[in-house]
Length: 99
Image (cartoon, rainbow, N blue to C red):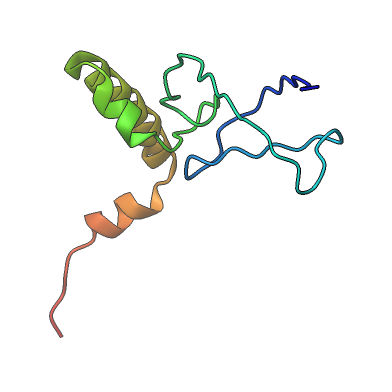
């Protein structure tokens, strides 16, 4: 008699899915049916205030206006970081002297 097992998992990098269950017996035949939930890939990998890596494929699926908004948001965060670090400004303010 066939036994039906339902497992919810996350697709791993490389499109891999790993299934582990104590009910699996080595060498046993199994038929796998996969239902992919309709979901959009996350644009940002984290929810912090710091700039984070962007999922490039998901990013390119966005409208031009949304891409510009996200890039502007990251630029504002980076600009604030540069304004706090005055060392680079002092280096650019010095004159070059030939010896």
